[in-house]
Image (cartoon, rainbow, N blue to C red; front, side, top):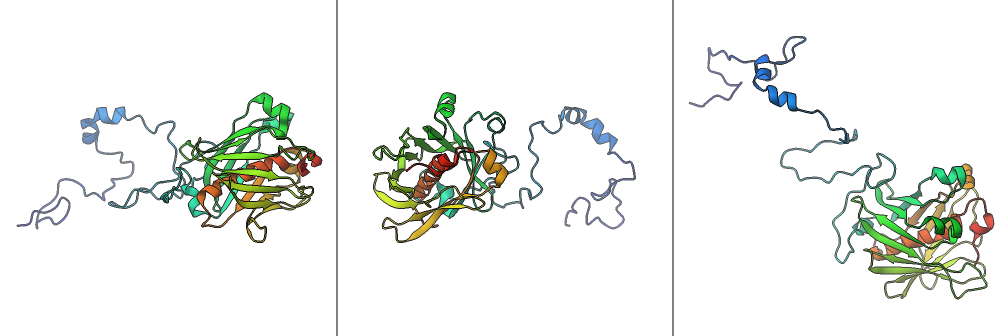
Length: 320
């Protein structure tokens, strides 16, 4: 004879002595006293939800069916930035990809949003810049934090040397940008602007150097061997009003446009009273991830050269 399962397939005439699983009890029913009495310690020792427990977002669908592979859920509120902004899931790293740059292998556009610092808005005290780096879906890829001492920030202003540390969702530094102190006078073209890109920290992957030109802002993108790879050419007038400012990414012969770095217009109030800026970067999907990281460095260099100062249009236009 087949042994009946609990709660189902009972023999004829058999009456179970316990309620079925679907039985909810009469109104006001609070449970079975015999079970509560049998486990007083377990029920009393349960502390309830922890104070630092992060409630999943409404779109969270749970762990999935039994036997399904474990999915990496987006991490929230780490290591900085706005609350509730999801992180981009980590893709499988391609071959010969520096650790942490695998996010760049599957995207062809990057959005960079600088965070508003209230101390700068209220009293004009220059603080370390912070940026959220996102993909086109709004998922955070990296979080960038400037690492510069107070004296350098407030004495040198937008011309200051700096170190920018770019962190992934685990808070690990995956890219380091270093801008040395350089001359900004057009009468001294022998000591122009430059930024160095390291990924991981300590391993150079490329450089962005300024090319002297009497009218146009020009930059050269170089690989880790300091060989020229691409050019960046901006407009003659950099201070755009009510419109985006585009810096075109071109081939070495300057004949083909393969992408652009755009300073996005953020509104009159924000443009006039803060130095916080939004940028967009477009490049080919199959571009080397190291060169994509160098594009990030070029974007930050352009920000400091043209758009970091507030209320000074001559400094925004730059000196070449």
